[in-house]
Image 1: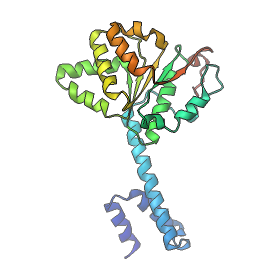
Image 2: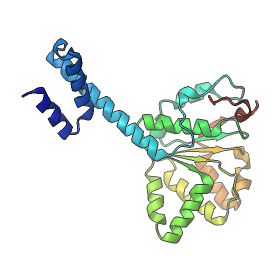
Image 3: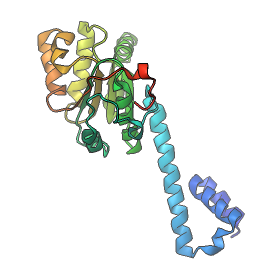
Image 4: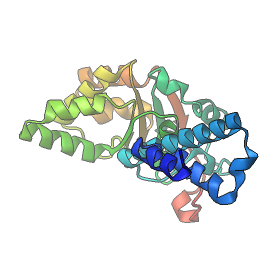
Amino acid sequence: MNNQGTLEKMHQMKLYGMARAFQASLDTGLKKDFTADELLAHLVDAEWDDRHNRKMNRLMKSAKFRYQASLEQINFRLKRNLDKNLLLRLADCSWIQQGKDVIISGETGLGKSFIASALGHQGCQYGYTVKYFNCAKLFSQMKLARAEGTYIKKMDQLQKQALLVLDDFGIYPFDMENRLILLELLEDRHGRKSTVVASQFPTQSWYELIGEPTIADAICDRLIHTSYQIKLKGGESIRKTKDHLE
């Protein structure tokens, strides 16, 4: 079997990472420096890395984050009451595996959306499916889906996501339909799938924001009491300081 034939078979079997590594070993002359088991291990590692990176890129593209952010980019020097230890605990994404939620609250400009996107990005790195939504746009999409008869399908797609990131929670008023959409979404995910909620309003004001006490109580009971909470406060707006590492 010649090397070109081996490369062609690798491509036919869609072993693209392995094929690139094998081609590189031929081009550089390193192939002769490997023992048989070392070469095999090198090719397998290359294929694993290639598949992992392609999967992560697909997850990132599908998530549609507001920011292309990562935990490594978060600036802990800024005075905004950001608990570094908590973020380090969240970095292993065990909370996603356990179906736990995260709430990020604080005034405008303190980096809530950036941190929420970074947590979602970390989830993608660990192989979890993630979707990012501005709350107003999510409710609009779900109302349109109901009108088009695709609501159940759309809700099912949302429920399958390991992590949902809901940004700008509470900025726009809740009508009855929005309340019921949110309640249904959280009802099915509670304890099973994870949700990150970013809001400029503190959690104690959510009952009033949501309105309709019975529904508000049901939503807050599922979301607030067992969640990790990141409460940002103080400091100058990051947007004003033009600090890109939020």
